[in-house]
Image (cartoon, rainbow, N blue to C red):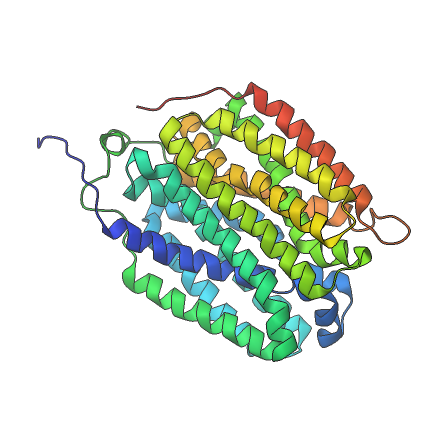
Length: 402
């Protein structure tokens, strides 16, 4: 038998970059109506909730499709799994641009776009594990998640500008064409795994379990992560979906709502990058999770009572930093504590939990407003839930994988 060897390939950065571009496209298509909810309702001649449903459907679809996607990725690998998602995203994203003001057709095409989501999101940690050494793994996961934030930020900020300057048709055509081009490029450039693993650890884990849901749900630490993800991702999905409706009663315009969304995501990008670098350097993920969550708690209370544009922007930046910086660290911490369960399995379960909570929060908080329409009561509830998540994080223990 040949001596075990590991090698790191420069192609890993090209693969990560094209994956990020695909992820970015998916998030733009998801969030493209959030900051133009009122205009979109008028354009499609439907009510506000039917426009909000175009975002919510991504969370609903994620729950059943995630298990299929996880099985497919575990069986056929990264290239086939994400490649399928990239093609679905590209074809139906472009098709939606041709649907015009036909809401039912747009709804169908949006459902088809949403099918691609689990193939991307459930592969984040798998890409890092297959191609990156231990010293870069959380950083790579962080960059993948940053591409999600960047896509959401672009969708929030750019969409109202494109709609005002051009039209809904032009906005959807630009997004759809981009998604189709990236889908084709991914199929051409993607590789499943390098000829030689990036670390000895990957060599030793080649025989890891195929599935492992029983191991996941018998792990007490993983249950805490699921609760934290339930609160964190659910809160994020609710805030981004309702962002225009949250800020309009406080005197902001749709473009300012888009700016707030962009600032929130900017905070997340900065936080995710910083926390990912610290996690790889310090190998102390549990303490970083606590730091992110305490910032989340403070900023949620702050944004609940912010009554000026500047205060909303500042609290939005802090909320993004706290709420979103915890993502890559949590995902890699989950991989650490659940090994040898495949990365796509732990990744997928956490994302399903976040999708379930997103649906619950969006539906439950729809009418949780003051008589003037302010979402203050909903934001207070999210503040309390984030405090509970922070307290639960004290039961997470530091782990070290050799």
